[in-house]
Amino acid sequence: MNAKELACKAEIERVEGKWASQKEAAARLGISERQFRRILRRYRLEGVAGLVSRKRGVPSNRKMEDAIREIVEDFINDPLLRGFGPTLMAEKIEQMKGIRLSKETVRKMMIEAGVWKAKVRKKVEPHYARPRRKHRGELVQIDGSEHAWLEDRGPKATLLVFVDDATSQILAAEFVPEECFYSYGNLCQRYFREHGVPQAFYSDRFSVFRVNRRDNIRYEPVTQFQRAVSALDIELICANSPQAKGRVERANQTLQDRLIKEMRLLGINDYEQANLYLPEFIRSYNRNFAVSPASSLDFHRPLDETLDLPFLFSIHDFRKVTKTLQINYAGRVYQVVTSHPAYFYADQEVLITCDASGFVSAWFHGNLLILEEVEKRSRQVAIVSSKSESTNPLPPAYDHPWRTYGKKINGKPVLTTLSSQ
Image (tube, rainbow, N blue to C red; front, side):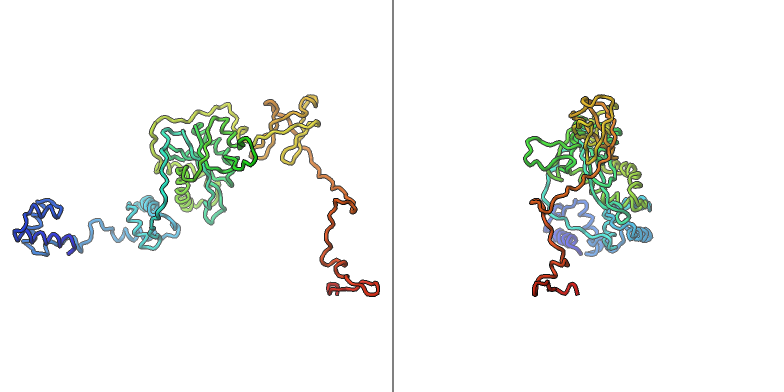
C-alpha cells in the first residue's frame, strides 16, 4: 500500500472505532463524503485489500501497442534523423508515419533509445521582453546568420532573415555568400516589391548598418545602407544587444534546427536549390509560429514605381573630373566622352555609382555620362643613385663571398667557413 492508501486505512479505522465522523474523515482525506462511503463499503466487504487501487499491475488503457512502438523506435533511430528534437520528431512521425504522439512521449522514447539526452535547465539572467509593435510593418528586425546550413554537403553560407516584430512572420529570407551591402540591398528590393516599404528596420551594429569607428570625426558617418533606406523614409534602429532583437535571433535558432533537417530530408545539396525551397519553408514556418497582430492595420507603404531601386542600392561616391576629363575610381581611370567643351566638366564633382556586378557609372546633375575605361600603365620605378642618402643598402646574402672571406694572410683573403668546399 502506498502512503495515500495507508492514510485512508487510518481514517477508516477511526470511523469504525467511533472516534470520528465520515464527514470529518472525508475532509481530512480531501475527498467527498460520497466517495468516502464507497471506500468504506469496499473495506467492509474485502478488508484491507479493498483499499488497494485496482489499476495496480494492470496495463494502462492508453498504453501504446507493441507494433506501433516498434515502428516509432525504428523511425527514431534512423540515421537520417540525427539531431532532431522531440517536438520536431513528433511532427515528422505524424507527417511521415501517420502516428500522432505527444512530444513528451516522444522525448521519453528518444531518451530510452539513447538518441536524446535530458537537459538540465540552467539559471540564466532574465531579459525582460519588449512589447510587440501593434501593426504589421511597423518594425522589421533584420539579421544575417552564418552557418553550415548544408552540414557536410556544402560550404558555409549566410542566411539573411527579415522578421516582422508584430507577428513574428518571416517576410523575406535568402542564402548569400556573405553578409554585405549588396546582399542586403538585393533582398530589400525583393521584399519592398512583395510587401511594401516598412516604417523601420531593427538591426545589430554590423558595419553594413553603422560606422562603429568614429575617431576624431566631428560628424556622424552614414553607411551606404543608411543612405539607401533614408531615401525611402525608413528609420534604421541599431540594437545595443542581441537580446534587444530577440525575435529575429529566436527565428535564427529555429531555422538552424528545422531548416537544416528539412533540407537534409529533401536531399538539397547546394544553395541554389535551398533558395528555391525557402518560400515553401517560410509558408510552413509562418503557419506554425506567426501570431496575429494587435491591430489589423498594415503599416507597409506601397512602393513608388518611379523609384530606381537598383540605382538606390548601388555604392554611391563622389569624384572630381580632371582637366583632361578623366575620373579616377577604385584604382581605374575612366575617360568622359562628351561633345561639350572640356571646361564644362573640368574640376566638377560627379556622382559615381557601382552596382553589385561592378559596373561603374557617373552622373552629373542627374544626367548619365558616357565613360570609357582607360588603360592604366604602371609607373616606371625611379632609378636612384647608390650614393644617394635616401638609399638603403641591403645586407649581403648568407653565402656571399664577403661573408666567406673574412681574414687575410700576407695581404690575401683566406676562407673562414666551409661553405665553398
